[in-house]
Image (cartoon, rainbow, N blue to C red; front, side, top):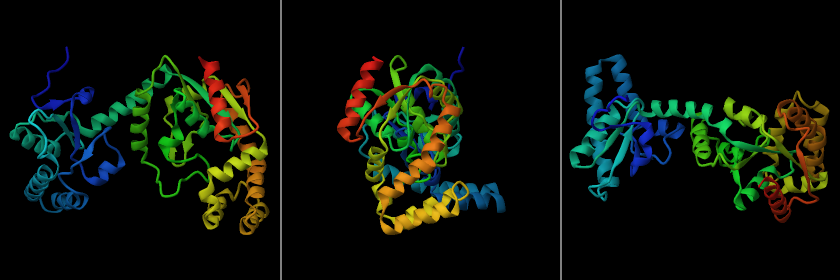
Length: 353
């Protein structure tokens, strides 16, 4: 028999019952991770939270609580005036903080006193985080993954987009990670999420999928940029049947020149990123690549990067990590433009139905 909750308290299992989810934590905590769809209405901002914490450690809990109460009251009043005055009486928000304690308790109490059926999340963000970890361990084996492999530049990410556009189910890990998964994979003006934020987005993506239908996913490494793919998901993907895209070197070079146009437009950034290959490539090779960049000889540079670095590395990695790599169904294309990838998507979906 489940334990009866106190009045005004809800659990992670009830998230869908609410009209809004309010994150009462500081903006810094919110930026790292939050519940899906949550809005940030902090009862203490980052600087205020630090002030109260310092006072608690250096003076006393009593002095810290006095200052905290004054700041929290002002902030809640401002949030109500600026964001909540238009809400009807039947509006039902869920409020959470780090542990489901004083910050969310103060906010939800005031909202309930106004007349809204506001609830406080039992256990706060920490309860959500436990839920994410548990679900990312339990869910992956239930899906019918189809692993899309292919040498660097064979358009795997764009193929996933084409499959999704045709109604196929896709788990786009690089999109969630905001990274293309190589030394040149960081995106301009788009930082990667924190690991916790990535995992919350990942859980949201997984729960939106139908386990009865195939899910297409790229054959990724354990790490995408600085983010790590959860172990259970990685194991489920690596053990799944696969398909391999094969395209001529010239088509792959042309594809990469367009897909990484921001790198071509910033030679200094390109030189800096290729410097991370020191130790994997000889100084002579790196110097030659720098010369090609300085000369604007980008097709020659990309061709060498593929044949001398990425292709051998990809072959070794895939053969070692993916059970299906050798037996993967091959799909060949002479071009990697949008029309060609759409035709591949159509063919792949037809074979998977």
